[in-house]
Image (tube, rainbow, N blue to C red; front, top):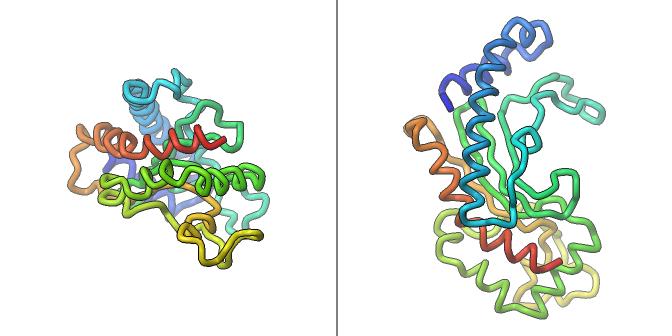
Length: 219
């Protein structure tokens, strides 16, 4: 994947985010998308080396469309300025953990995984799992690699108060307040050779894997 070419294209798209520009430069987009698909194929193969539960999935089912959903957005720019993909057993099914990454117009890689959108019922299951089997969850929050590389679980999607029925003074309260269980990290690709991109993503996914497994076991 030629990341610099991709980021330059996305940067130009951001400055000219309209259908006419995109149509005129569609061949460039398709060239980069083909590279992205090849990267996705390799990543699927690599994930299955350490997480066979993912299975073989179609690259087309991993890639997000570049077209933005404008129905509920004040920003009517028709195109996203990132190439993104997620890896899960069933993309249409909610509450399944995913591996995720994207590359944006600033040549930044965001790599992460876990579960972001959780139904109310499943979220309650996770909270009860944390309280009933704290040692399993502690293997995640005290994992040295997770804390070193990601700085721990992402806590941005959290309740301000303790969820109903839970003690504010519980030692696990900050985790019981979470509305998602995921990890994420941004990395500049400016000094990363293109030949190292795939391995960089996979090494981060390997670190995320224990969280993916904890989520699967917590259903």
